[in-house]
Image (cartoon, rainbow, N blue to C red; front, side, top):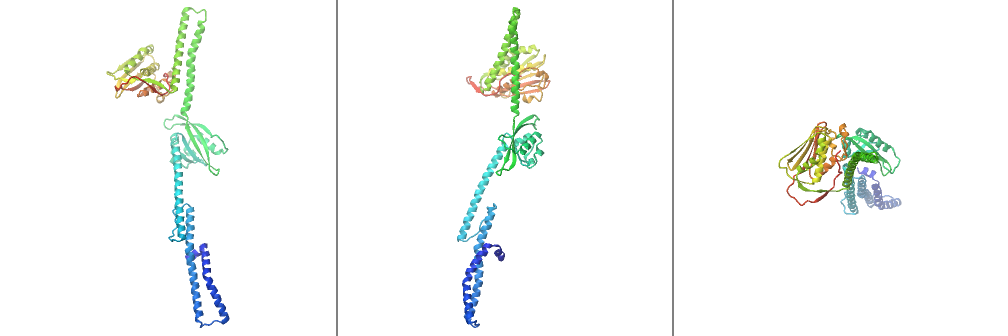
Amino acid sequence: MDWLFLKQNSIFRKIFSITLSVSLLPLLVSWIYVLRNAAQHGFDPGDRVAIVFYLASGAATVLALAGSYFVSKRISQPITHFTRTAKEIARGNFDERVVIESQDEIGQLARIFNYMTTELRRLRDLDLNRIFNEKSKTESILKNIADGVIGTDASNNIIMVNAVMEQWFGIKEKQCMGKPLETCISTNSLLHFITKVRDNDKPSTALPETEIKIKSPKNWRDVFLQARAARIINEKGEFVGIVTILRDITREKEIDRMKTELVSMVAHELRSPLTSISGFSELLLDPTVNREQSEEYAGIILKESNRLSELINKFLDISKIEAGKIQIKRVPMQLRDVLDKVLDVNMTQAERKGIVVSVKVANDIPLVLGDKDMLEQVVLNLFSNAVKYSPENTAIELRLKEHENDVLCEIEDNGYGISEKALPRIFEKFYRVTDNEKVREITGTGLGLSLVKEIIEIHGGNIEVKSKLGEGSTFSFTIPKYNGAFQEPGTETFEYGLMGEMG
């Protein structure tokens, strides 16, 4: 084993050669002297001094060989150990240590070397912790971002999918990791977009983007997504993958659609009275028109002017609320009084259609704390809708009763009803039911129920609707009971959505 060590260790060989040379040099000089002396005077076998010298020289030579070997090994072994340990550390194994217990310079060097290794490991761990923390932070951001995120490598294999993406496309990250994109994503437009970005290596200052449409796995409604993709290039300038971010723009597209419909509706609503005013004004200028006709035309002009003024005022109210503020004045009141006032003023609407209106009010209804004008607007919207969306010769029933900590108001009709598809959106701003031909022919703004919901929620109540197509609807809302802790009437300011009448 020692000879194998000698053969493989060049440092040992060099040290051994040097120490052996130094050790044998005096012996060599002595041997030269003895041999020269023997050559001059001859070799005497009986010369004991010469024999002792020869034997001592031989023993000294053997000792020199052995001493050189052990000294060389003692010096070279720590160096070899240092070399082997340094190679292990270079490979990243910071657990390696130089085990040298001596107190000489080699031992001090070993302790310094081990301290350096400990510090390298500490710095490595700190760096790894920093990298791990940054990685965890980045992953956490990507996992919890409101947008969908999917990462693919240079071969279009999936390397990351966040929770939003899982929800939109009905996939699981664990099942898709490392798999080709097309095995998990079936939306052709997204596949084509990511593949196109991957294959296009031309530099660009703007991120490629496209719009895709998918079906929501929850309710199979259309969801519109804006996709943007970025090519990932490493430090060597090599393409390593793509990160694609998808943002839900369904609401934005719905708002654009509603704005278009609103502009169309406003134009139509303004055009009708303006056309009437213009036409009958021209007739009034006709000298052949008699007094009776003039009065009739003037009445129509006044009626249409009032209609136009009312429409403009409502949209001015909308603009005011869109600015962010509206005031509410709370006072203790009876909801029965609100129902009576609305019915007194608007009962003729029902009478014209032959609709029978009945009111059922329980005894001892408690007070509520609310804004009387706003609650009148709530009941007016719901009652007007019941009349508007009911055929002739039907019935409407208003009910008022105490319900736990609230006062419950219900307005039930036998009208056209609302489809199951439209019910979840009935309180959305600008939304109008269009899947019923009879309802579609009735004009309106699509803002009233949104307003009703906002007012009820401002008062701390709730509103809901039950309906079946062709069987009528029941709208019910609650207002918390007045607890008796009355303060002087004041004005509160609330932020809420658009105001308008039901369409």
